[in-house]
Length: 382
Image (cartoon, rainbow, N blue to C red):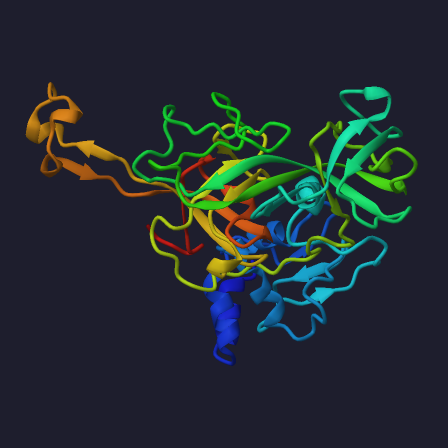
C-alpha cells in the first residue's frame, strides 16, 4: 500500500508549506477521495488531516488548484502525489462545496444580529383589525418610518436578549441566573429566562450588546395619509408572527459571508476573556452543528472564519486525602484544594461577527459545548 506520509515528507524538503502539510497528514487516509454532495471542506480535511481547520493549507500549497473554494462534487482529490494534493476536475454539474454547511446555519445567519441599542428604531404600533399577532399576507402599522417610500422592504426584528460578560466564579450553575427575557418594549421580564442562558457577575456584568431576532420581512405599501400618522406595511415573507413593539430595520442585500477560510485568532486573548455565552435552541449545552454566541467580537480581533477550541473550565476539588472525607468544601481552606485542568470539548468556527459578540458553529467535539466554557487557540494543548 502506498505510504502517503513518507512521500509527502520527502517532498516537504522543497517547500516549507509542504513540510507543514506533511506534519499534519493522517496515516490512514486513502490515495484518492471523490468529493460527494453534502461534503464540506472541513469534513474532507478531517479525513486526511490531524487538524481539519487547517484545510486551506492543502489548497494553498498546491498552485494547480485555482480557487480553494471551488471544489465540486465529483472532483477527485489525489493524495498519492509526491509534492501536491491534486484535484482532478469533476463534471461541474453542481454548486461548489463550502467550508461549513451554510444550509444548516442560514436561519441564524439571517435572523440574529447584535446592536448597542434599539430604542431609536421604528416599531410596529398596531396590526390590521386590531389583531394581537400578524403573519404573511397581513398588514401592520409602524411608527417612526420617516420618508419611507412604497416598495421599500424592512426586516421585522425583536429584541430578545441582553448579553453581558460572564463571571467565572459564578458561571454556570443552576442558581443566580439573570433574567434576560425581554418584553415588547425590550425591557427585562423579571423571573424568566431565555434559551440563550448566561451568568453575570455581581452588578450585572459589562454590557456586550442586545440581540435582535428577525421575525419576518414586510414591504411599505403607503406612508402616513388622512387621519393616520403611521406607515402601512404588508408582511410578505414566511417567518415568525409579528406583534406590536417589534422593530424595523432595512433589509440587507447580503448580510453575511458566503465563504469562510478557517484561521486561528488574530491575537492572543487573556484567560477568561473569551467565553461561550449561549447555545441556540438549548439551555446551556450544544454539539456539532449547533450555533453558539461568544463573548468576543470584532473589537477583540475576531472575524469570520476564526476558529477556537472550547474547554470546560477545570473544577476546584478538595484534597480529601489531606483533609479527610468528612469536611465540607466550604470549611476547607484554599491550601487544601487543587485546581483540576481544563478539559477540551470541541472546535468552533465564527461565521458572523459584531463589535463585542460573535456567532460560531460547533464543528466537532468530544464532549458537549456548554455556556461558560473557555475559548482558546484551536491548537491549545491544555
